[in-house]
Length: 386
Image 1 (cartoon, rainbow, N blue to C red):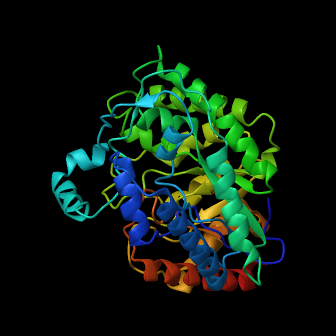
Image 2: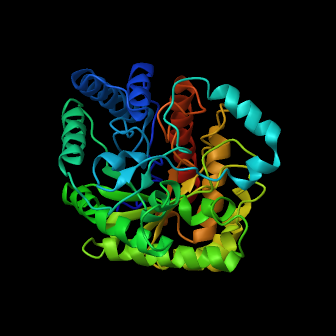
């Protein structure tokens, strides 16, 4: 995994805006409607080429395919694994339940086509990995898009879900316990994890479950119960990552990529020692949003695990405000001082910009402006730190 040896490198957390035509196709497919496969392939190809071009133009150093080939960051696994069917009834985030007017506003926004993450399929049978071809096609499509560019990324990354988010959001109607379900999903994800790294990409594990489930599935239970879940999930993840060098994996943890009050978010302080047990080489962390911007102090007090890099979220992905480069630089300076070494810090975003097709809250043209601000702020921070 690249470090910021000469300058602060820029990256992001994975998903980038999808064009409306592609969103419409994914939304229809997620409802079980017939979709023209050739039309979908053509849209994915064009969208992947577009986001690769845009990332490079914005100055992103460590880039990806923007998840253009997937309906969302985790529900896509239903087409690659056995055992899924029916419909989950996902608990609403506790902060949204406490502020119903916020939900009313969100429902107005959700009138547009989108892929729902609150009504994903359930596990109704044994979950096993079935089909490696879809991932191979995605990786081939990304390679083809890269081949059309005169410039290249300094490094590439590829996202895959943690076993915990799949097991929590695609609810269990088959296994005797949540732990057993998480373990089965980890085994089913292992071939995907290994294939990503074998193709030369840094593997990013998307694990909102390791923070968000505190105010979702575990909202009415003691903190210790949630932390036990975190430990079990990380153990299952480590088992799935056993054949991959830790320095080829970064772990993305967040509290939910939605514009809500977030008053029920768990603090980073009790989480960090448990996250440090993951067999990874870096942490992608939300540090820009108003609820967690102060937690650089936690990193300063507790320390980042030895050898890890920090992808500091310095761009908020839920607002159309464009951060000033000086704000980005200030946030990076705080992160670097907290870690104690600017070479271990990369500039990133709090989360993705379109984690499920059609649910992005930031206008596409603003996304690219935010990434340009990320580049410019990283350059300012480089001059002050490196």
